[in-house]
Length: 91
Image (cartoon, rainbow, N blue to C red; front, side):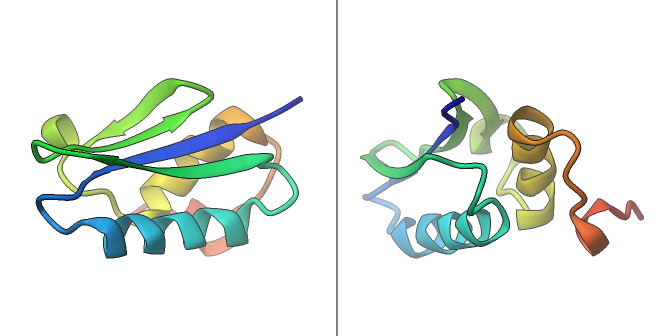
């Protein structure tokens, strides 16, 4: 099974560093589970994370994501059995 993650970010807002950092976090956590991770330049304040074309995080609705929140959402779709260690803990 292929699992693709796409992070679309706003170039006008200079959010590439944030998108790249989140991409690094996801690739480190899911190095065996993801077959592709892409960064998609966008405009208009966009910051959206998609897993297999499904939107799992949209900044316009949810604000900027914490990496642990995105990791849980990605995990639930690509490797539900995977433990995220301390990232699984809820406050």
